[in-house]
Length: 326
Ligand code: HEM
Image 1: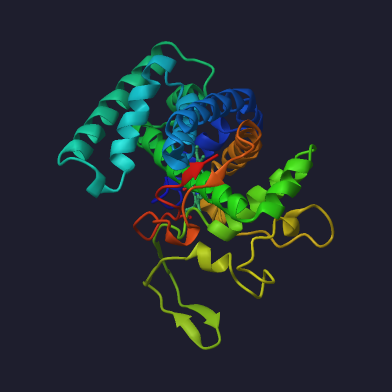
Image 2: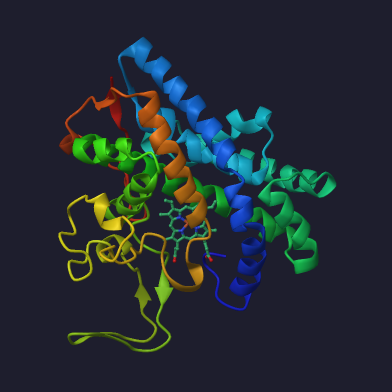
Protein backbone atom coordinates (compact mmCIF):
# COMPACT_ATOMS: atom_id res chain seq x y z
CA UNK A 1 0.00 0.00 0.00
CA UNK A 2 2.75 2.40 1.01
CA UNK A 3 4.56 1.89 -2.30
CA UNK A 4 1.56 1.72 -4.65
CA UNK A 5 -0.35 4.37 -6.62
CA UNK A 6 -4.02 4.61 -7.56
CA UNK A 7 -5.99 2.57 -8.51
CA UNK A 8 -4.27 -0.19 -6.47
CA UNK A 9 -3.58 2.14 -3.58
CA UNK A 10 -7.19 3.38 -3.54
CA UNK A 11 -8.52 -0.18 -3.33
CA UNK A 12 -6.14 -1.23 -0.54
CA UNK A 13 -6.60 2.02 1.35
CA UNK A 14 -10.42 1.83 1.16
CA UNK A 15 -10.42 -1.62 2.76
CA UNK A 16 -8.00 -0.72 5.54
CA UNK A 17 -9.76 2.57 6.30
CA UNK A 18 -13.00 0.62 6.65
CA UNK A 19 -11.35 -1.60 9.29
CA UNK A 20 -9.61 1.30 11.09
CA UNK A 21 -12.74 3.26 11.98
CA UNK A 22 -12.36 5.86 14.78
CA UNK A 23 -14.82 3.82 16.86
CA UNK A 24 -12.74 0.64 16.57
CA UNK A 25 -9.50 2.48 17.30
CA UNK A 26 -10.97 4.31 20.31
CA UNK A 27 -12.29 1.01 21.67
CA UNK A 28 -8.64 -0.01 22.18
CA UNK A 29 -8.18 2.64 24.91
CA UNK A 30 -8.76 0.37 27.95
CA UNK A 31 -6.54 -2.35 26.52
CA UNK A 32 -3.76 0.15 25.80
CA UNK A 33 -4.09 1.45 29.37
CA UNK A 34 -3.86 -2.08 30.75
CA UNK A 35 -0.77 -2.88 28.66
CA UNK A 36 0.91 0.44 29.54
CA UNK A 37 0.20 0.00 33.26
CA UNK A 38 1.63 -3.54 33.16
CA UNK A 39 4.82 -2.36 31.43
CA UNK A 40 5.19 0.62 33.79
CA UNK A 41 4.96 -1.88 36.69
CA UNK A 42 7.67 -4.06 35.09
CA UNK A 43 9.81 -0.97 34.58
CA UNK A 44 9.43 -0.01 38.24
CA UNK A 45 10.43 -3.55 39.27
CA UNK A 46 13.52 -3.41 37.03
CA UNK A 47 14.48 -0.03 38.48
CA UNK A 48 13.97 -1.34 41.99
CA UNK A 49 16.21 -4.31 41.24
CA UNK A 50 18.93 -2.75 39.06
CA UNK A 51 18.89 0.97 39.89
CA UNK A 52 18.90 1.96 36.19
CA UNK A 53 17.28 0.48 33.11
CA UNK A 54 16.65 1.21 29.42
CA UNK A 55 13.21 2.75 28.94
CA UNK A 56 13.21 1.95 25.20
CA UNK A 57 13.66 -1.75 25.88
CA UNK A 58 11.28 -1.87 28.84
CA UNK A 59 8.48 0.44 27.68
CA UNK A 60 8.72 2.33 24.37
CA UNK A 61 9.46 -0.79 22.30
CA UNK A 62 7.12 -3.40 23.80
CA UNK A 63 4.03 -1.19 24.11
CA UNK A 64 3.48 -0.49 20.38
CA UNK A 65 4.30 -4.11 19.51
CA UNK A 66 1.73 -5.36 22.01
CA UNK A 67 -0.83 -2.83 20.74
CA UNK A 68 -0.30 -4.04 17.16
CA UNK A 69 -0.79 -7.52 18.65
CA UNK A 70 -4.26 -6.29 19.73
CA UNK A 71 -4.92 -4.79 16.28
CA UNK A 72 -3.91 -8.02 14.56
CA UNK A 73 -5.74 -10.15 17.12
CA UNK A 74 -2.60 -12.08 18.10
CA UNK A 75 -3.58 -14.37 21.03
CA UNK A 76 -1.99 -13.44 24.37
CA UNK A 77 0.00 -16.67 24.42
CA UNK A 78 1.81 -15.68 21.19
CA UNK A 79 2.64 -12.08 22.15
CA UNK A 80 6.08 -12.90 23.59
CA UNK A 81 7.04 -14.54 20.26
CA UNK A 82 5.74 -11.53 18.32
CA UNK A 83 7.81 -9.26 20.53
CA UNK A 84 10.96 -11.36 20.16
CA UNK A 85 10.70 -11.69 16.34
CA UNK A 86 9.96 -7.99 15.91
CA UNK A 87 12.89 -7.11 18.13
CA UNK A 88 15.21 -9.25 16.02
CA UNK A 89 13.95 -7.91 12.69
CA UNK A 90 13.94 -4.28 13.79
CA UNK A 91 17.10 -4.07 15.86
CA UNK A 92 20.26 -2.48 14.58
CA UNK A 93 21.94 -5.47 12.95
CA UNK A 94 25.20 -5.11 14.86
CA UNK A 95 23.40 -6.07 18.07
CA UNK A 96 22.45 -9.49 16.75
CA UNK A 97 23.97 -12.82 15.87
CA UNK A 98 24.38 -13.61 12.13
CA UNK A 99 21.28 -15.31 10.68
CA UNK A 100 19.01 -14.15 13.52
CA UNK A 101 17.27 -11.53 11.33
CA UNK A 102 16.52 -14.03 8.52
CA UNK A 103 15.19 -16.58 11.00
CA UNK A 104 12.91 -13.97 12.56
CA UNK A 105 11.55 -12.91 9.13
CA UNK A 106 10.81 -16.54 8.29
CA UNK A 107 9.09 -17.08 11.63
CA UNK A 108 6.97 -13.92 11.24
CA UNK A 109 6.02 -14.89 7.69
CA UNK A 110 4.87 -18.35 8.79
CA UNK A 111 3.07 -16.92 11.81
CA UNK A 112 1.11 -14.28 9.85
CA UNK A 113 0.18 -16.84 7.16
CA UNK A 114 -1.30 -19.08 9.87
CA UNK A 115 -2.95 -16.10 11.57
CA UNK A 116 -4.80 -15.15 8.36
CA UNK A 117 -6.09 -18.73 8.03
CA UNK A 118 -7.20 -18.65 11.70
CA UNK A 119 -9.03 -15.32 11.27
CA UNK A 120 -10.80 -16.71 8.24
CA UNK A 121 -11.95 -19.78 10.17
CA UNK A 122 -12.82 -18.02 13.43
CA UNK A 123 -12.88 -14.19 13.18
CA UNK A 124 -12.35 -12.27 16.43
CA UNK A 125 -13.34 -8.72 17.39
CA UNK A 126 -9.95 -7.34 16.30
CA UNK A 127 -9.35 -4.95 13.40
CA UNK A 128 -7.43 -7.49 11.37
CA UNK A 129 -10.37 -9.93 11.45
CA UNK A 130 -12.52 -7.21 9.84
CA UNK A 131 -9.90 -6.75 7.16
CA UNK A 132 -9.65 -10.49 6.51
CA UNK A 133 -13.44 -10.67 6.27
CA UNK A 134 -13.77 -7.61 4.02
CA UNK A 135 -10.89 -8.87 1.88
CA UNK A 136 -13.11 -11.58 0.47
CA UNK A 137 -15.66 -9.07 -0.87
CA UNK A 138 -13.07 -6.38 -1.59
CA UNK A 139 -10.82 -8.55 -3.71
CA UNK A 140 -7.79 -8.51 -1.43
CA UNK A 141 -5.51 -11.42 -2.33
CA UNK A 142 -3.86 -13.50 0.41
CA UNK A 143 -0.45 -12.09 -0.49
CA UNK A 144 -1.83 -8.57 -0.08
CA UNK A 145 -3.27 -9.45 3.33
CA UNK A 146 0.06 -10.85 4.41
CA UNK A 147 1.81 -7.67 3.22
CA UNK A 148 -0.77 -5.68 5.17
CA UNK A 149 0.01 -7.55 8.41
CA UNK A 150 3.70 -6.74 7.92
CA UNK A 151 2.93 -3.12 7.03
CA UNK A 152 0.77 -2.63 10.13
CA UNK A 153 3.45 -4.12 12.36
CA UNK A 154 6.38 -2.19 10.91
CA UNK A 155 4.61 1.10 10.15
CA UNK A 156 3.03 0.94 13.59
CA UNK A 157 5.69 -0.10 16.06
CA UNK A 158 8.99 1.60 15.19
CA UNK A 159 7.37 4.99 14.66
CA UNK A 160 5.35 4.87 17.87
CA UNK A 161 8.34 3.54 19.78
CA UNK A 162 10.31 6.60 18.69
CA UNK A 163 7.43 8.90 19.61
CA UNK A 164 7.19 7.43 23.13
CA UNK A 165 10.96 7.49 23.67
CA UNK A 166 11.40 11.01 22.28
CA UNK A 167 8.43 12.42 24.19
CA UNK A 168 9.75 10.91 27.44
CA UNK A 169 13.21 12.33 26.75
CA UNK A 170 11.78 15.77 25.97
CA UNK A 171 9.71 15.77 29.17
CA UNK A 172 12.63 14.63 31.32
CA UNK A 173 14.80 17.41 29.88
CA UNK A 174 12.01 20.03 30.21
CA UNK A 175 10.83 19.65 33.83
CA UNK A 176 8.56 22.73 33.66
CA UNK A 177 6.64 21.18 30.79
CA UNK A 178 6.39 17.88 32.65
CA UNK A 179 5.07 19.71 35.72
CA UNK A 180 2.47 21.54 33.60
CA UNK A 181 1.32 18.27 32.02
CA UNK A 182 1.07 16.60 35.43
CA UNK A 183 -1.14 19.37 36.79
CA UNK A 184 -3.61 19.11 33.92
CA UNK A 185 -6.22 16.53 34.86
CA UNK A 186 -8.38 17.19 31.78
CA UNK A 187 -5.63 15.74 29.56
CA UNK A 188 -5.43 18.73 27.20
CA UNK A 189 -1.78 19.31 28.03
CA UNK A 190 -0.94 15.66 27.31
CA UNK A 191 -2.58 16.07 23.88
CA UNK A 192 -0.42 19.15 23.34
CA UNK A 193 2.72 17.32 24.53
CA UNK A 194 1.99 14.55 22.02
CA UNK A 195 1.52 16.99 19.11
CA UNK A 196 4.61 18.98 20.00
CA UNK A 197 6.70 15.81 20.42
CA UNK A 198 5.49 14.64 16.99
CA UNK A 199 6.53 17.98 15.49
CA UNK A 200 9.79 18.40 17.37
CA UNK A 201 11.04 14.79 17.18
CA UNK A 202 9.55 13.66 13.81
CA UNK A 203 9.56 9.89 14.55
CA UNK A 204 9.45 9.19 10.80
CA UNK A 205 12.06 11.55 9.44
CA UNK A 206 11.18 11.22 5.76
CA UNK A 207 8.45 9.76 3.58
CA UNK A 208 8.90 6.81 1.26
CA UNK A 209 10.31 7.69 -2.18
CA UNK A 210 8.16 9.72 -4.55
CA UNK A 211 8.67 10.23 -8.29
CA UNK A 212 7.69 13.49 -9.99
CA UNK A 213 5.37 13.05 -12.97
CA UNK A 214 5.92 16.66 -14.10
CA UNK A 215 8.29 19.55 -13.35
CA UNK A 216 7.60 20.90 -9.85
CA UNK A 217 8.40 24.56 -9.22
CA UNK A 218 9.42 24.96 -5.57
CA UNK A 219 9.81 28.75 -5.87
CA UNK A 220 13.03 30.69 -5.39
CA UNK A 221 14.39 29.28 -8.64
CA UNK A 222 14.30 25.64 -7.50
CA UNK A 223 12.61 23.29 -9.95
CA UNK A 224 12.47 19.51 -9.47
CA UNK A 225 12.38 18.04 -12.97
CA UNK A 226 9.85 15.45 -14.11
CA UNK A 227 10.96 11.87 -13.47
CA UNK A 228 13.09 12.70 -10.41
CA UNK A 229 13.16 10.60 -7.25
CA UNK A 230 12.21 12.69 -4.25
CA UNK A 231 12.55 12.04 -0.53
CA UNK A 232 10.41 14.49 1.42
CA UNK A 233 12.07 15.29 4.74
CA UNK A 234 9.17 15.69 7.16
CA UNK A 235 11.58 16.51 10.00
CA UNK A 236 12.74 19.61 8.08
CA UNK A 237 9.16 20.71 7.34
CA UNK A 238 8.40 20.33 11.05
CA UNK A 239 11.19 22.77 11.96
CA UNK A 240 10.27 25.35 9.28
CA UNK A 241 10.75 28.75 11.00
CA UNK A 242 8.24 30.28 8.57
CA UNK A 243 5.56 28.02 10.00
CA UNK A 244 6.66 27.45 13.61
CA UNK A 245 8.21 30.35 15.54
CA UNK A 246 11.28 29.17 17.48
CA UNK A 247 11.04 25.79 15.77
CA UNK A 248 13.84 24.15 17.78
CA UNK A 249 12.15 24.91 21.11
CA UNK A 250 9.97 22.22 22.71
CA UNK A 251 6.87 24.22 23.64
CA UNK A 252 3.73 22.04 24.00
CA UNK A 253 1.74 25.21 24.78
CA UNK A 254 1.73 26.03 21.07
CA UNK A 255 -0.67 23.11 20.57
CA UNK A 256 -3.16 24.03 23.29
CA UNK A 257 -6.61 24.83 21.85
CA UNK A 258 -7.25 28.50 21.06
CA UNK A 259 -6.74 31.11 18.36
CA UNK A 260 -2.93 31.03 18.82
CA UNK A 261 -2.70 27.28 18.18
CA UNK A 262 0.26 26.40 15.95
CA UNK A 263 -0.13 25.17 12.38
CA UNK A 264 -0.54 21.44 11.82
CA UNK A 265 2.75 19.51 11.68
CA UNK A 266 3.70 17.04 8.95
CA UNK A 267 4.75 14.12 11.19
CA UNK A 268 2.03 11.85 9.77
CA UNK A 269 2.70 12.81 6.15
CA UNK A 270 0.31 14.40 3.70
CA UNK A 271 -2.06 13.44 0.89
CA UNK A 272 -3.29 10.00 -0.16
CA UNK A 273 -0.67 8.16 1.97
CA UNK A 274 -1.41 10.15 5.15
CA UNK A 275 -0.74 7.83 8.08
CA UNK A 276 -3.51 5.32 8.56
CA UNK A 277 -2.53 4.83 12.19
CA UNK A 278 -2.38 8.50 13.24
CA UNK A 279 -5.36 8.19 15.57
CA UNK A 280 -3.98 5.02 17.14
CA UNK A 281 -0.50 6.52 17.61
CA UNK A 282 -1.96 9.62 19.28
CA UNK A 283 -4.13 7.44 21.50
CA UNK A 284 -1.14 5.34 22.58
CA UNK A 285 0.94 8.37 23.51
CA UNK A 286 -1.82 10.24 25.34
CA UNK A 287 -2.75 7.13 27.34
CA UNK A 288 0.79 5.81 28.00
CA UNK A 289 2.70 8.99 28.87
CA UNK A 290 0.56 10.15 31.85
CA UNK A 291 0.39 6.56 33.09
CA UNK A 292 4.18 6.24 32.95
CA UNK A 293 4.84 9.46 34.85
CA UNK A 294 2.11 8.64 37.40
CA UNK A 295 3.57 5.20 38.08
CA UNK A 296 7.15 6.53 38.32
CA UNK A 297 6.97 10.03 39.80
CA UNK A 298 10.73 10.20 40.45
CA UNK A 299 11.78 9.09 36.95
CA UNK A 300 14.97 10.78 35.72
CA UNK A 301 17.59 10.34 33.02
CA UNK A 302 20.59 8.28 34.05
CA UNK A 303 22.91 9.76 31.37
CA UNK A 304 23.82 13.07 29.78
CA UNK A 305 21.12 13.57 27.10
CA UNK A 306 23.71 15.03 24.74
CA UNK A 307 25.51 11.68 24.64
CA UNK A 308 22.49 9.48 23.82
CA UNK A 309 23.00 7.29 20.75
CA UNK A 310 20.32 7.61 18.04
CA UNK A 311 18.96 4.87 15.80
CA UNK A 312 20.89 4.50 12.55
CA UNK A 313 19.36 5.19 9.11
CA UNK A 314 17.57 8.02 7.37
CA UNK A 315 13.96 7.00 7.76
CA UNK A 316 13.18 6.73 11.45
CA UNK A 317 14.40 8.98 14.22
CA UNK A 318 14.59 8.30 17.94
CA UNK A 319 17.04 7.44 20.74
CA UNK A 320 18.42 3.94 20.49
CA UNK A 321 18.32 3.62 24.26
CA UNK A 322 17.11 5.78 27.11
CA UNK A 323 18.81 4.84 30.39
CA UNK A 324 16.64 6.00 33.30
CA UNK A 325 16.77 5.85 37.09
CA UNK A 326 14.52 7.02 39.95
C1 HEM B 1 4.09 8.15 15.91
C2 HEM B 1 3.66 7.19 15.16
C3 HEM B 1 3.56 7.23 13.66
C4 HEM B 1 4.11 8.12 12.76
C5 HEM B 1 5.00 9.33 13.04
C6 HEM B 1 3.69 7.69 11.44
C7 HEM B 1 4.01 8.33 10.27
C8 HEM B 1 3.57 7.97 9.02
C9 HEM B 1 3.86 8.69 7.80
C10 HEM B 1 4.70 9.96 7.70
C11 HEM B 1 3.27 8.02 6.78
C12 HEM B 1 3.29 8.42 5.30
C13 HEM B 1 4.52 7.88 4.62
C14 HEM B 1 4.65 8.34 3.19
O1 HEM B 1 3.93 9.25 2.75
O2 HEM B 1 5.51 7.78 2.47
C15 HEM B 1 2.61 6.87 7.34
C16 HEM B 1 1.91 5.93 6.62
C17 HEM B 1 1.30 4.82 7.18
N1 HEM B 1 1.18 4.53 8.53
FE1 HEM B 1 1.96 5.60 10.06
N2 HEM B 1 2.92 6.55 11.57
C18 HEM B 1 2.80 6.25 12.90
C19 HEM B 1 2.08 5.20 13.47
C20 HEM B 1 1.35 4.27 12.76
C21 HEM B 1 0.57 3.21 13.34
C22 HEM B 1 0.39 2.97 14.84
C23 HEM B 1 0.06 2.49 12.29
C24 HEM B 1 -0.82 1.27 12.27
C25 HEM B 1 -1.19 0.54 13.18
C26 HEM B 1 0.49 3.12 11.07
C27 HEM B 1 0.18 2.68 9.82
C28 HEM B 1 0.51 3.33 8.63
C29 HEM B 1 0.17 2.83 7.33
C30 HEM B 1 -0.60 1.55 7.03
C31 HEM B 1 0.66 3.77 6.40
C32 HEM B 1 0.55 3.70 4.88
C33 HEM B 1 -0.64 4.48 4.42
C34 HEM B 1 -0.76 4.52 2.90
O3 HEM B 1 0.20 4.22 2.19
O4 HEM B 1 -1.86 4.88 2.43
N3 HEM B 1 1.27 4.21 11.39
N4 HEM B 1 2.79 6.86 8.71
